[in-house]
Structure formats: C-alpha cells, structure tokens
Image 1 (cartoon, rainbow, N blue to C red):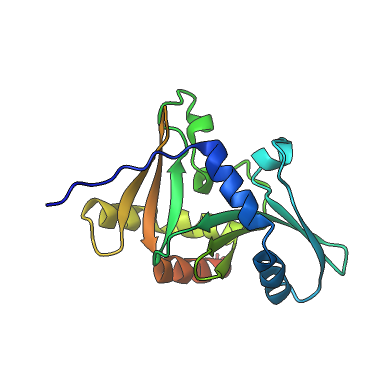
Image 2 (image 1 turned 30 degrees about the horizontal axis):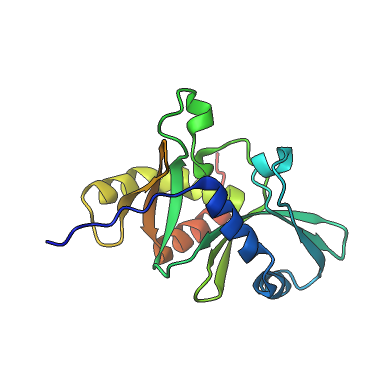
Length: 187
C-alpha cells in the first residue's frame, strides 16, 4: 500500500485561488447561461459582513432583483459534491464551527458549485439544498461510514485545525435537490 499525501490547506491561499477563479470570464458566461436576464454581476472579495454571510458574488437581473451567490470551486475533477459540515474542528463555539451546509445564517440564493478544470458549474438553490441535506443526512452519513462507493468523510487539514465535509456523488445531490424543490403540504 502506498503512502498517502496530506495537503495542508491555508485559508488565505485557498481564498486567493477562489478569487482568481471568480474573476475569470468563466463566471460571466455561466451567469449569462443560468440567468438569461442578467444585467451584471460583481464579486465580493473583501473580508466584510456580506462575505461572512456567504455572499461571494451578486448577480443583478434586468428586473432589478439581486441574486446572492456563494461559490465553491473545485480545482481537481471529482464526480462528487463536498458538503462541509464542520468548518473548524478546534472551535469550541459550536455555532462558529458549523460548516457552510449547516449554517442558518447564510443569506444566499444559490450555491454555485464549480469544477474549474471542466469549466462546469451547477447552481444549487440554497433552501432546496438545505432541505435536501435535512431529508437525506442520515442515509448519507450511513453510506459514508460504510464507505459505499462515492460516499466518504473528507478532512481538509489546515495548519491549526481541520475542516470536515461529506463527499456525496454529484448525481445523488442533484436528485435530492430536485426532489426538495417541490414542497407538498397536506392536512
């Protein structure tokens, strides 16, 4: 069995890499295809309250409506979607330690999940993604624990802490989000 290579993630370096990707013409093309009435879009690069609410990009539609987008860029082509459930495993405040998929405080309309090498992005409606997480987490956890094909817990090591995500097959997440888009309420 070969040795595994551990990559140490550095938040500021990852942020810079993502910001570089955010300025690419890729995003302009993706937003125009996803939102045909888009008038303009702009990145939110600064460390500010909006950034802490998940807002990486703002898309302005011709109607005047603003769409708030949280971007997730993968630079290696995997056939899964990482759903971050713990952002900092050394944080003692449980609310501050929540990963993005579990944060009630995010003020976004979509997660734009991009695979940069493939120039592919999927726009996941935020509330539907949260509903899909809530409806499927028990099954996804079980499959990750059993290491079923395509499901696993992923640790991203940082210099002083680790971030934890569940890797879920892309098709499974997309199907779960589609199912969560329709809300049926009966007596």
